[in-house]
Each structure stands twice: as structure tokens, then as C-alpha cells.
Image 1 (tube, rainbow, N blue to C red):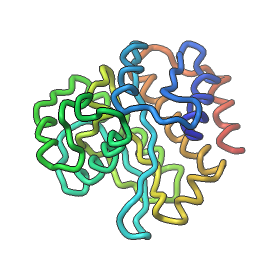
Image 2: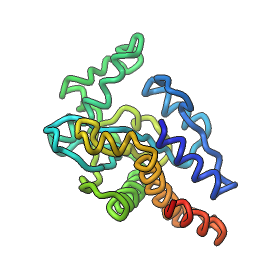
Image 3: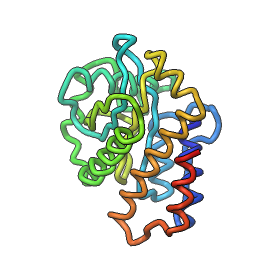
Image 4: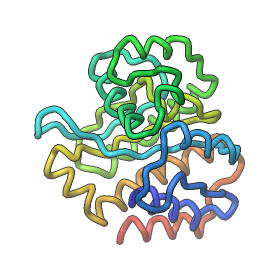
Length: 219
């Protein structure tokens, strides 16, 4: 939440033409399907879902960014299971998600039928995010990956899910919980957004905005 709010602030300060829509602005739980519905209802041009990772050995660390697709490894499937398991907190989730069970591998067969028309743009943005993380953060780049993520399944625009680090790694948990760490992650995603926007529209940040961003990065 803190990273998302900081990212929104950076975008709004540098792009007056961009409308920021938060799926939440306080620490409340929003059902997965509702998050993409909010994006669709507002006719969003880009959907960014920010998460913190966990699992594996305590030494496991790094950032990775996911786009919707069929998992190509058991590791990606486990991430999808973990992210999708929050639907168990929702009332009547079996009806909402048409019998989908996040813990059953066979449930993910449905993602084989997904043909995402925004795949190229999603991959482009995800790659930009990971490149910025590599330039700015002292943690491994775990790459751009595909997985059957419910939060991205019904979004009608380029969409990514960012895993900003591992809470199960104490050093990364401390970084994620620090204001400095949150700002560094937010600036990384913002810089990727800036590059993505310049490639996909004619609106490019003004020199004043560029100077302001450099100042933010130095602070």
C-alpha cells in the first residue's frame, strides 16, 4: 500500500494528464476480481498490481514482475497459487470464480485458453520495471515471468503484477518496511512507467518534471 501511494504521488506530480485510480487507499482487503473490475470500470490504460513476495529459504530474495499467462515452471505455479489463495478470504468465492480452486494444479488449465491481446505491451512494461530495479536496487533480478494470476485475468488493458521483494528474507523485509526502500521501489516503477508512456503516447514528461524526478531520486 505504501509503495502504491508513493508511486501514485510521483505520477500525479509529474503528469497532470494522468488520472490515478487506486483500488484501495487504506489498509483494507479488496477481492481480486473487484480490483480488475475497478480498472475496467474506469477504462484504465494500464493496471499495476504491487505485492510483496515470500517463501523458499530465508536467503531467497529479489524482484520479479509477472504478466498473465500459462506458468512454464513449478516455481511460477507456486507463486500463482500463493497470490490466488487470497480468494479464500472472500465470501462465496467458488461461485465468484466459477469453481476455481487456487490450490489445485488442474484449475490452472483454464489459463491455457487465455489469449491476451495486451501481452506485448504488458511484457514491455514488465521488462522496463525489472530493468529499473536492476539499476536502482541491490537485489537480484529474478526476471519477467508468466503465470495464471486471477487479479490480472479480467483486466482489459496492459497489466503487470510486481513482486517487490521477499518478506521471508529479513534484509528485504526491513527494506520493504522502510520509507527509503518504499520510495526507491516506487521511483523504479515510476521510471518504467515514464518510459512506457513515452513509447505508447505522445505525452512525455516536461524538463521541469525531469528535474523534479532527479531531485526525488537524490533525496
